[in-house]
Image (cartoon, rainbow, N blue to C red; front, side, top):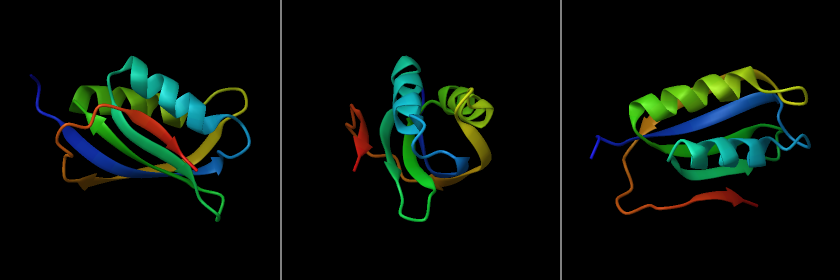
Length: 93
């Protein structure tokens, strides 16, 4: 099994009210990434992403690219400790 990494991420821009959390979740699941994503009261979206570095890099590219509705101004990642046995990617409310 490939080595897992975990990151805490924060996205700013047009990332609330545009399906961003579902967009992140869908792409994470397709890439085998676990973790969570959550809207914050300041208009940002935070998340924790766990998977292979290659999968995280691919998801980061997808997030930064956005789509017709999603316009990410900035997206930063900070390393976190891997959570053993995590199996899901959830949307937190």
